[in-house]
Image 1 (cartoon, each protein chain N blue to C red):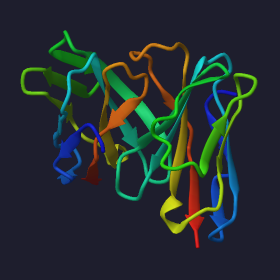
Image 2 (image 1 turned 180 degrees about the horizontal axis):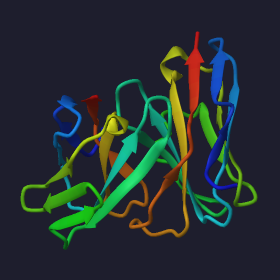
Image 3 (image 1 turned 120 degrees about the vertical axis):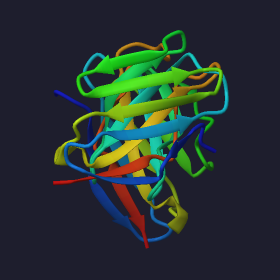
Length: 111
Length: 115
């Protein structure tokens, strides 16, 4: 079974709007990562946030982490059509080197 | 190469056939992972190598799945006697080090369809 779940499952917005995706997970973590997957392509790493961090920025991306609620959010500002993709959160697990992925949010940005 | 490459990109197999999927990680990367991604789902972990050692194979769904990385670089995932439920995208990822805070770089995947 997968570690996390993203919410919403699908999101459709107009170009220029902001998009917010949420991720909840089940066990304690050392870090949480967000990945993007375009149709038919591999996963691209976007950002990593450590368990002792609450917020992190990278370009148009803003990630927050609330370990007390076991949740994270990814905000994409000023969205572009090229942001259309599926977004996954991924966490490490206790004693594991691999990542546990959520179910993903499918984002569509309408030009 | 510049990134992780996988071959073939697409594979159609008849039920019962054996298949072999190849992964070329980024040169010098110590860690290599295999994931299985069903349609509409997130990737699920299959197995992990540190150099040539297979340290974790807890995600392999059955003994029909076998992975190797004999020289610590290229890896092969083999599925014997394929079943329809094996249809999925198989993703390979590599990372420079062995810690769980390392960024994993993913290949484009092999899409397997078992008829």
